[in-house]
Amino acid sequence: EMSYRQTMALAVPTLYRSIDTALASPAPDAADDGASEAALEALREQPCIWVGSGFVRPAVTALVSPLSLQPHLYVVSADLQSFGSLLRRLGVRDRFGSSQLVRLLEDLAFRHASAPLDSASLEMVLSVVQQLASPQHQPLPPTQIYLPDTACAMVVAHELLFDDTPWLSDSLAGGQQAAGGQAASILSSASKRRRV
View: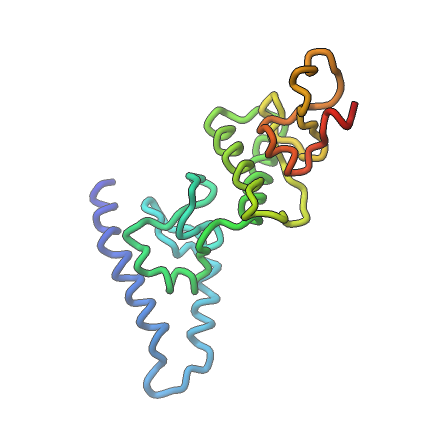
C-alpha cells in the first residue's frame, strides 16, 4: 500500500506533465485538426483525476472545498494544484457547484431509501445543506432537494416542516420535521408556523 502510494506520487505528476505537453503542442507535421479537443473530450468521461487512493472522473472533483465529501466528491490534492490549468480543461471545477451538492444529497437519499443515515453521513449531509443554503449557491437548480428529517432519513424538502416555533413544538402536532435548522427553510421546507 505505502509502496503503491509512493510510486503513484512520482508517476502522476509525470503523467499530467506529459498530457499537458501533448495537448499544448500540436503535431509538427500537421495542423491541429481537433485531435487535442477530442482527446480532452475522451478523458473528461474517464477516471483520470488522481485523488490519492485512485483515479476518479473529473465530474466528481474540485480544486478546493471547505467540506470533506469523500467518497462522493473529491478535492484535488495540494501536490497536483500546479496542474490546475490542465485539470480545469479536463473538467475539474474550481469549487463544487450547487448541482454537484444537490446530486450528492439525491444519491444518499436513494442509497439509504427511508433508512436513517449513520452519524458520519448525517454530519456530511448537514454540512452540505448549510453550504447549499449559503448565498453563493442561491438560486438553486430547479430540482427536488432531499433533506434529513428528525429521524435522520432523507426526505424531499417540500414534504418537511421547518420548526420555526420551537417554544410551541411540544403542543403543536402535524408534519414531518426537518433536521438542519434554518437552512431547511431556505431549501424549500415549509414553515411549521404557517402550516398550523
